[in-house]
Image 1 (cartoon, rainbow, N blue to C red):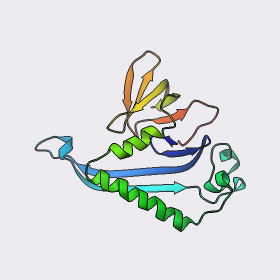
Image 2: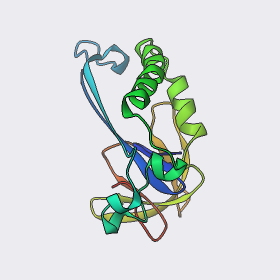
Image 3: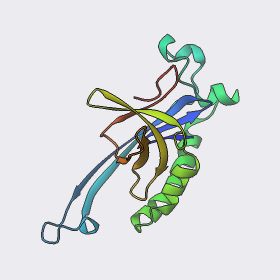
Image 4: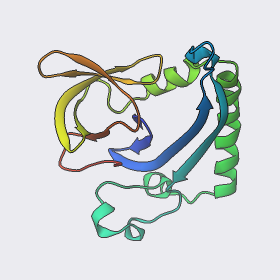
Length: 169
């Protein structure tokens, strides 16, 4: 499952983290965001592949896992990376054609947080909310206890699943 915005979870444990950095320029003459120019996007993916449970620090053993732990098999990392890149390329081509729907559908269908009670941490303030959905801009739509809704963007907050542990800060 995908823990918005950048973690992959299996059996309530983090198996993968994804970081994305983008540099873009808005066309000042039109001030229209659709007219923005993306200079570059850098994607970093960290996957726990062949780790044994003893290979994780004690404090992570309850919150981290690996493909090997989950399947009882070792994997050739080069083959795994090739499969990821082949699938990534299909999504990249769609994104390059301004078709975000496939990526957003994957995020919504496999969401770890939609429908769950969560804590939002912003400026060292914790707000309880319920994750409702992911909008067409990739923002997490939440509803606070007072019934107000908000759209949360990446980098603005840290999301914690309300359990006895934290996943992916």
